[in-house]
Picture 1 (cartoon, helix red, strand yellow):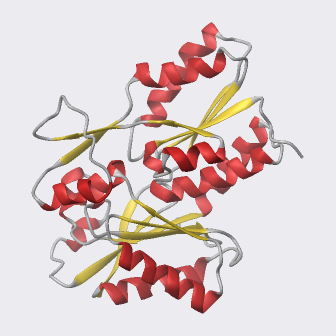
Picture 2 (picture 1 turned 30 degrees about the vertical axis):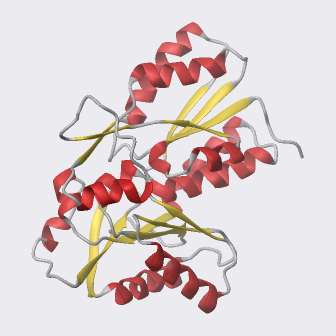
Length: 292
């Protein structure tokens, strides 16, 4: 079956899909704004280790949703070609990207009444969002209609598991992405929090363990308890902690025989709030996280 070319699949830079990877999937990206607190008028161009080195050296990174004009320009360029749009947005609990895109969609609907624009609140972020986008792009590649791809995203976003640990809770507290993290205010050196972004897009601290090795073990245990299909793809993200990400990958491969594991560096949008040294695992789970 041929790819359905009647619509364009969009996501945003909070998905941590690089331009190259997104393009390979046939996905277009919208870009959130990232800037340093001491230079708010200038976009931050640092990427990879350079960005995290800046944070380690005391720089404070800030983020905001893309401008209306940026989203409108990207969307309108597609509509003018006679194609429709499906946008899988960064969680509305963590950003105003979903709400901003809805405003743009309503404006463009009046100007292009024959075109369709669907905005889905993924309640996901980082490579959890990237995983959902990948699965939707795969379906689009097999001919799924816009409505079918949108329905898949809406029916499966709650299954995407986001488990991660961070080096320092300071970044999350400072960014206000705390949920129940206040309970971990007294975390001591060497104690690692195990965090969950639940199906409502709310960040919660679930447990704490001593040391990075035990943090990896804890995340693998959650995978073992929750995984929907051990043959499905897993995404691992990190904020300039490749050794920890590779350790997590190697254990998953050895213990579960998983072949489809993708490791990616978490970009500045999420990294500004997670800080350097974080590692995360993303997969489809079978258990409801409503109690989390």
